[in-house]
Length: 303
Image 1 (cartoon, rainbow, N blue to C red):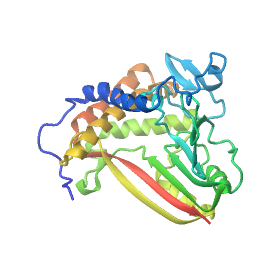
Image 2 (image 1 turned 180 degrees about the horizontal axis):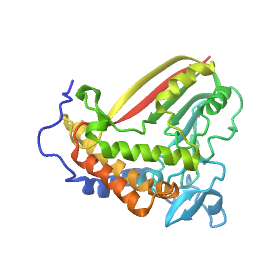
Image 3 (image 1 turned 180 degrees about the vertical axis):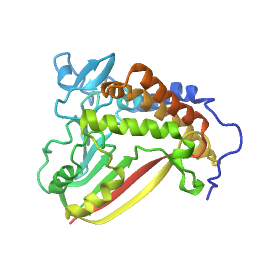
Image 4 (image 1 turned 90 degrees about the vertical axis):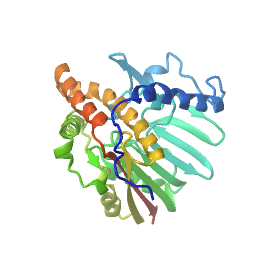
């Protein structure tokens, strides 16, 4: 097992700009080779259809579902490549994905993408789905218990529910025994402010750590199993593969910080306050060793 001791060699932001510039293009090149833009599997939105899915504010593209609380732009590199958050449904070999932010509807023989408010009832019949995978839906869900009841309705007996949510809080790898409030005050302030903004502006609460209890309390699931995974932030890990993942993930977080700026402004922060808040967090992302993001995973079977 590789050591979790932080690499003692030089550490900082060197190379992150290259990661930001190259990573989306590399992924796009790989994706485009299998599903080109002129593929018949892709349905391009017409100008008349566009307002049904998206609106433009401050030069950024947002979804236009009036009932959905999802606050972030839909024009990030991840969304453009359709590696979006949302719900995945599997039925008899066919996969359907429902997302707040999918840029284009996609239809194929075995897979289709839909833009859908996950807080609304699902169109699938009772007991007709084998698997539901809820990935990073916490910024789109107002009542997770209601979502679980609808998931339980469409799952067949023995069907599998999987949840994966990133914790919106600063953390260090448990093996390092470091306290975030002492070593990353900027990150603590950033996430505290973001949590308040999500609550005030969208009614969204943190749910990542509470999902296992909610699933157990619903009574519709058995074999509830939870596990946490720790993604390094920055190239602090001694293992070369984890170091590379950490560098790429830190670049993704830098993009994430930029994407929440409109929400922070909506919550009442001035341009200067947003700048100070973001600067403090980004400085720690680039200089503090041992930071991780925690991925909370849960899986359970329909009774």
